[in-house]
Length: 515
Image (cartoon, rainbow, N blue to C red; front, side, top):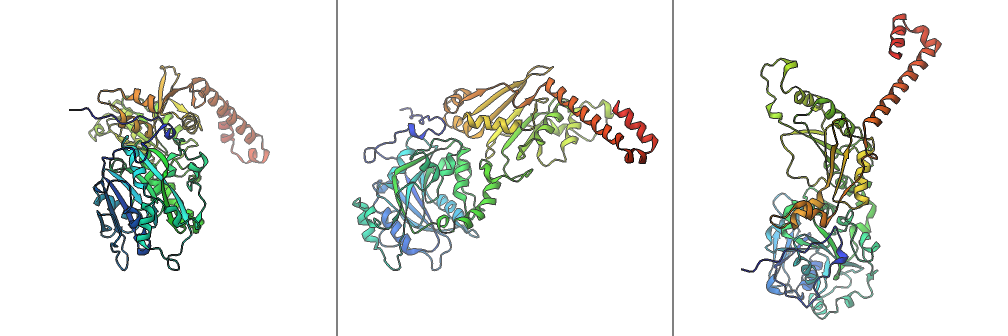
């Protein structure tokens, strides 16, 4: 039996290093499902289906699933359409484009999903251009090149048969030649980079629901679309696919034309205002949306792991307190240990064999940002970073924020350091969730995960001084605190009206405290 070809390994989001198969010169084998969510707009849907009837992708490997999201009157199938086309309803009690997409994918059968809006006319090679990427691996997410056209179908209707023939003849662009609004990439990140997507930190932001493809395996792994997001679910889906190791690419040959302006063009500010709280809660990597100081969010930016098993209270408290008091507020702390062993049986309090574990739990059980788990959680996603830190390693106030910034600046999948201490080096490791997920997807049986991580994202190390306090700096900070306290007490004692109003016994206590 022939051994299957392992998936192509691509570093970070280096989509420019890839050369997908030339259109018309490869042999497709995977079944593709085109999922089209729709609410009304029968006239535009007819044109979309007409364009899909003229695809170069093999008809026997292509199905189209239209999801009727409660249209009145209900949508119907026109005469011009692909052979394997059907309409399915949205799930009972659900509405909105995100729920419709999820219902359509659930009803489809393809290994590859092409998501297309119900007002987007596809070029003849659109599906083929998308599908060729997914032959190389199951972790690609691909957007097509979308152009907006200013059309009024009520005043100037287009016949579906004419659209099909134009698409089949390679003349689709001629249908909209004098109506197209620009010919540049609409997605800012793609436009900035001249058609490539190579920034691994921001790559997920290109996810555009109008024309995007991915494998069913990737969709299922990331949990699918969030049906609670009426708008902006495409960016959220892109973010969660990134946390599962997705690589994002833009294909200029996957051409499509959007019939009319999108909501984000016609009501841009209103759309941004609506999307912002939904995206801010779910997508921590969009840092510009999280500007409110001290806020907690549904998905934290960093999960901090501290192993409390066998540790003393004091170093655990020092580490956790510093993390929670840092400039990076959207964190969660996971304290691992045998918490289930803390029973209510009678025990001499000071002779308790689990004394430190009990004190640690009592110290932090009232803080909603701290969780107590028996073992390290298997899943990190959708949290983008996980920091494993030894008890006693104390971040500077901005240390965690700067540590993550260093990993982003140097595009590292893992960043390691060790903080010197009287008990030996305290190990610290920052892991990027997206990098570990990519390495897991590409690892061959028996292959070392760290070796794959190094190959596809990179592992770095650095001195801890910029991010963590050492014993000397802790002592300096303590001395500064004492000097500040002495100065404050001196000012209090030196203020005559205040001094006269204080009882003699209080003044005596102040002097003793100052000493």
